[in-house]
Image (cartoon, rainbow, N blue to C red; front, top):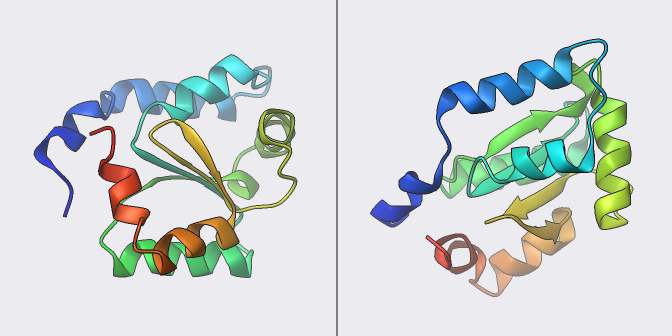
Length: 129
């Protein structure tokens, strides 16, 4: 479904792992720069909370469409609340899910569903591939 160039945009796994570990560390507070760097690690980045029904809806949609996002479960991270605060400052969206495609903020569940209904989700993902 994705163009071959899409996989070339994914940063090395070591860098993604390093960023995740930094967010897990007790003394590292996420900054806007760190969150921006994380958002650039994958064509689709999905900030979620494991108990959120709207997040589950988007996860199921991505699974059905064979879209493999980088999923950040905020409630599984020690610094999840801090990351969420940074996201609110960046996007003004106070809820999850919070989805970024090719580094651009898309929005939450309703925004993703609008892209699906208009048959533009895959085009949006592949647009900058």
